[in-house]
Length: 250
Length: 250
Image (cartoon, rainbow over all chains, first blue to last red; front, side, top):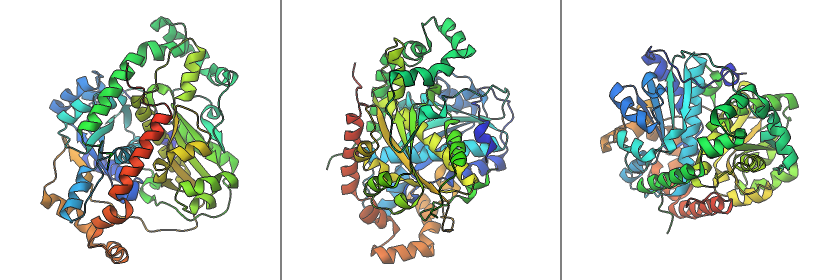
């Protein structure tokens, strides 16, 4: 079974070495082999390697320096623009400017992204996904010149690793997997499923650093606060609407 | 580089052989190694193998018989329920009942799904994604007992292949990949990028079967019509709202 999957770590520290052109081509080909709805390939992949563009993307990814240090910043976009253009040139009447297709194309973009990540890791490259893509979609649209019916879904920074971090922990399999149907969690279930995570040395260190009572409060009070969640929800919905994906009425 | 990625075909015809338990465990472990936002693992994986449940899912996936024939139907869900429960038990105040987290968790669910698919294919299993998941989310929620803050994102059928289909074609790499920024397509670009796809024997056969003028019209008039797109957009948005993911106001 594929080793990259089990040895995956997010890499945030990269060597300056560029990615050879033929290797980049190969991992992009891995991306487009991905399963996708109706073989419509309703996504686009924007590979940014120029310093000037990476510098414009930097603040949009909250100044995480890997955005300029990694040789490539790859933005995966849901894209119905290309498909609609093709339809219109063929006397077909496309109507993919709605939420269903935003969501469908987003899924397809992510499947392609993960293919790229695994192919890249198989070749000794390191990757990190940037969730900030969904916080600043509107501004990324401007920087990358994304037209209507195109929206960024996720970003991957890519390059040769300059660090070798520990494997991060995961909840036990039974916390995430349900057989047959979903089994609702009792309080006892939650306590026991999160026990190992909470007892880690790293978790205890983070609690001290963040001056919270426990690990959960680090998420709700520091990393992903209600105020920010609501602010960025509104921004994301606005971007989706502005890109033309909200024509959901007859 | 991983061979499964380049030899991927969607499998719709399965042998009756069950998937050995230890193999299923291994590919589920591959799924949960996936990159995910804040290591919150805001997704759940529902593995349905019982005939009675697969039969209930069958019409929700438009009676594609692989849903009952495949030994396992795996529904990947965005899940903030588990995480919010944990927060509430820890005197933390979670606010992940909004669109940002629906979208974020959906992305994470898909990354996990694609890890599972590649790991499964590495072991000789075959997979097919079911986009119908987004059309009938509400009914799938009922069948799988998904609580508030859980919604199905995509479904994968899994089993040993009983067919060996041809590799499907893709648009040329330059149709999908942009360097530095997005390059808008001219009419000539579209014509040349779609030329190979349109000239395939299979495409010409489909046009005759569907009685359309060209390939694009098969999509707009037969497979994914405007009327259906709008209907299913509304249904999907309703499901998202009913699951509690639309509290986007302060």
